[in-house]
Length: 241
Image (cartoon, rainbow, N blue to C red; front, side):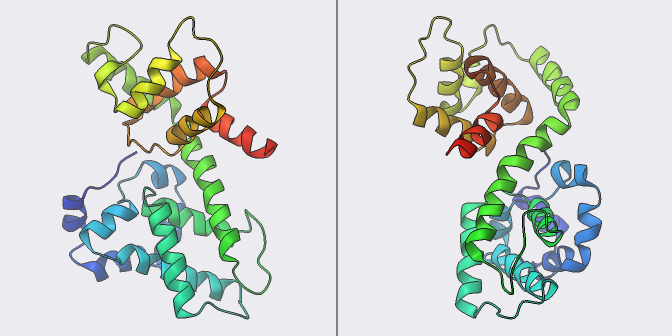
């Protein structure tokens, strides 16, 4: 996935208003009509937007919420406090999402992909749907372009000396621990289920901001250890829970 950094955001959007116009509801269809571009196109994350233009991510979320209320003909709309709180929750909890991904989520909400609203937006349902979106689509986005990622990994691997499957210092500590545990040949299956779930969620959400190549490799060894990929594990546990 291509993510714009702070400097690139400043170069692409001269000011806060320019950025907001670029991601207004009128532009959403042009962004989401090519889903591959949503995942792999060059867009900033919510946290990067706020690092460059403070509180602009919350403004963008508010605009999407207001647009959604108009779209569903809500008979009871949020008050100012609710707008502020919900936008802050979305930006703080899902800071790692690219703005294009959040736009795709709201588009899918409008299409009834997750369910219906009855006269007003239910904030808790919306957050739950967004969590489902993160689990499902962030993982599918990687798998949808699997061949490209594998080719990139092979090229990366050939240029870096990696003599074993532990990856050592190539990965942040949290992911190194997962990789080391996954590659223990004689490890007994006595892992703490909560830790396994935590490691699966860390990979699904890519909390360590691994490159596609590193993420692919860690997921491969995780699957070898646990018998399924992290997304499948999280989805299965969610259904059982």
